[in-house]
Length: 404
Image 1 (cartoon, rainbow, N blue to C red):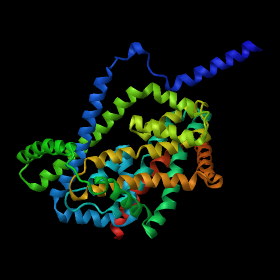
Image 2: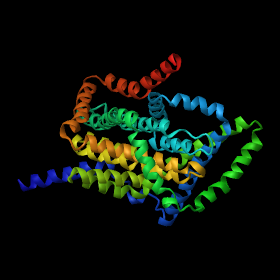
Image 3: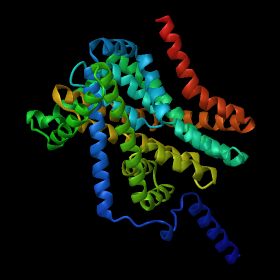
Image 4: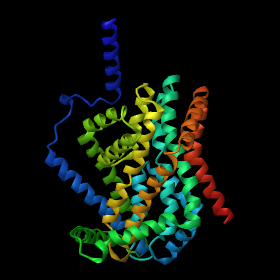
């Protein structure tokens, strides 16, 4: 009997280590810690450079273009749809929120904070598509797919619930905007003590030659502005993707350790694990996507994965604060305000949904029901992902355009 028990324990250990085991050390080229640190700093600088250039590019487009865009986002529902579509297309809420922060902090004609709040909410919904896409890889095995799809979609249902609760509250009271504005007034300049950031000075010195080179290539100011926006978008996307890879490679062993320990701790500590892991790898999608194969293998239950997922939601807000560091000029405080809006939205959703068991069970039950339905017919899984994240938002945007 004791031998049987030992074998079972060994089997469990093997099953745990298989889904997320790092490659053997012999297969990995060792990277010196100093080189990793330099790479991270360079990528952060490139990321901030892109955010800064984005604001300058939109400034150069002129008031007419911005007014047409801002009038569309003045409809909070359209702002939500834009946030969802933008995030699902680039597969990263970090990119979307960074772009929003850059628009809000534009030197002239900035995106109004009130318009940007629903866009932040939409980005939170759009980022969950990655989990669902990862879970589709398990479609060939029925029970495995059911478990994986449930863990993936509980993230969807939680974020949709958060929007359904907080968007009406925001529209009627301005809770997120007012609270974030109040807090940012104390954070920016430490209560009035302004200083010239050396980071901002370095950004300006590098961005100047880039703008001059673009101006030399393109004669028309509008075309130069569009090219600057495109270059800035590429810089933001490339820097974030590269940063995620560097951080993931550097922290892979610790990420595995944190998640393995989160299986047997309290929900609050599991949320903290989700926050820490997401900050380390700079991507909530990586954190939550790691949970999907673990659930499919039967190592992780839906109830265990849920608080880690919520923690990942909170952890991903750090990227918006990094983007706010690149903001300059009179609207720098607005950039910090948007970063705080993102943080307050996720923290408030957690406090409203998770503590009450009956409310907490809603996304879990919905995820289980959808997983059972998708298991019976795989077409429902595909229809859910494509319809909810791509077709439906695009349809609403087209209808709003023609009706409006």
